Length: 497
Ligand code: BES
Ligand code: MG
Ligand code: ZN
Image (tube, rainbow, N blue to C red; front, side, top):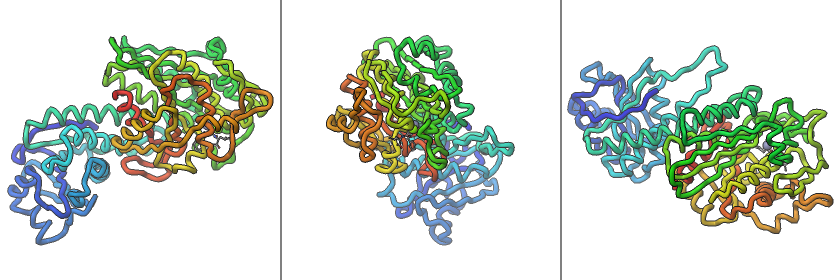
């Protein structure tokens, strides 16, 4: 499916479906819809007023065949609700609704969408195009690879049309940027949806490597087991010991000419979390192929950044391994040594993510970057605290926390702060090592963050827990059931800021 832009008028239009938005309270038609109404002998106004078949209620849809009286075969009217309630987030929902309404309408459909909300000056043209593009691409996500009967999209082109030519450059830019954002998020969703048996550390490392092809500004280093040992990341290695899959550590670097800041982004990369010897019960293990969501998301963000080419140096890191029970597994009671020399007593082999992240954080710290951000499906406690639609953010720099929450809100992704205090270290006390890998059952997300703080000296460190948001059991806004790629858009904008 391609998304394009075009300046046009009703006389020139040629399309299978022309989509127009109509507000519930203020049925004043947009400039293009007005022309259309005249062309069709007031049939649109009649449906709205005399026949009252369409009220303009939010997300109400109404198909009207034109019997080829002019260049559009069909009109799809979509309700926008009350004009005072409408904003860029409502627009995103409208975008998703348009896609589901036109998909499977006819094969190879060419769809034209009239500007929505722009004549009412609800937001700038760039924001309009970026958001509707993102919503359409995100809602068109599907994963058909393993189905014999594939349900492919029937839409060939979606064109954002406008009567005037003055906003065309803004629309084009919005489509371009929105496509980069949404395709990067879908890239992450695809990688997470792939079964653990396929998305192994070795294969994900290959995907990372492919992101570095044909670009002299990008380098990709993949470390194998022996090399990881040499880097002294033996805590990370312990987690993967029980698995038949080899671990990998990935380091992607994007280096622009004169970077104004340097950022390291770390994604948790447990390709399957069985819990290890502290085995998870079946219901909790079910979606644990998603425990590499952090890794998939930072790869998606990296892909976007290399396309947007900002003057920001970006390092993307992930310690990839599988947490499995076997005769070779690491055990409760084992003492592990992290890259910075601190020792960890294994209290629970299911608290594995923080162990792999500990070494990745040490590695990031040594890069001497300005900021470090990790993103991880880290704790069930985070799901209890914030549910499936809000990610937790923690750290020790309040300004950065406030900034990412704000950027999230503007991106249509929700983040909320959970506390981290040094006194939480008490709960991690071990009798025979520097600390244990688990603290109290209460405030579990915060305890995990406190554990991580031992492995990073950079004061500008942020930790994002997406245990609840990486995977959704129910469709949520423009996201279908399954992997979400949570915080991809927020992180891209945060890095650009
Ligand atoms: N990968 C899980 C966290 C998780 C839970 C992700 C639910 C997605 C949904 C993590 O490795 C884990 O098992 N955490 C334990 C830690 C506990 C043993 C201290 C948990 O939260 O139960
Ligand atoms: Mg676990
Ligand atoms: Zn895990």
